[in-house]
Length: 302
Image 1: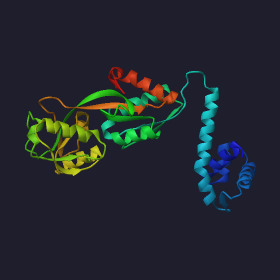
Image 2: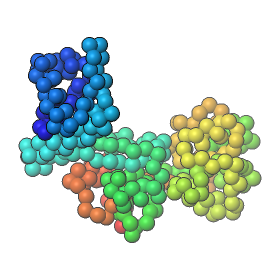
Image 3: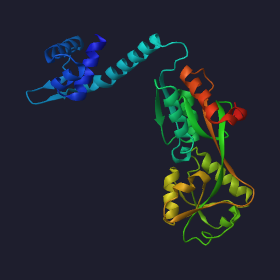
Image 4: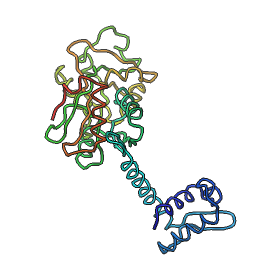
């Protein structure tokens, strides 16, 4: 089996038309058909149902397609590795993030990576809560993850990126919606919307600790993981929410963000990565994070 056979198969599978595939590969249609026949004979299975009007993948073709793409991708990485001069960064990197809470940290990093290391492919995995991120870093499913700090320093390295003050999101008809000054304890009798207790979300931990320090335990009206959905439920009048200040611009109609007086409570945003040896790509992205957030190395833990 040759790589060019797999390349021909993938192109035909994507086009489902031998003429279009031949044009894309810049070969004549007859040699392309012969290449596919050679691959089918080698594998002992038909890969396409052919008729005068259509071309469709067989069950064997569907089974082969993801593996063929993976082989071609790895071959491409190998070719670039051989040609690469010392210091070039290539390959792929998986980055986990929680979603809306990383709106101010994820975009600067991904843009910088694309500009500095255009040959590095990023695989972004969303809706990953902090504790799940630690599991996936341990297993190697993720290379780097945006997390809420603190994390278990025995499991991972972590670097603080920024501190973000917490505030309250309340419905527009809430008695304190128009108040000039509010404190967290003013909401002791309200119904809170929070992430689930066992979801591994640092947002839940920050909220519970802050409320405890303010002298009360929050009454929970509803638990939901997605921070943006929490904002939507507040706007719908279901309850109030303790949220990071950076989300103020994302509060939907029907709700308002209130800054809190008193001792500030901060959400600590960070990057985490496994203590196991990583790739050159991972180390390069971590160095890039140093440039974007210069104070991060001073706040490195683990």
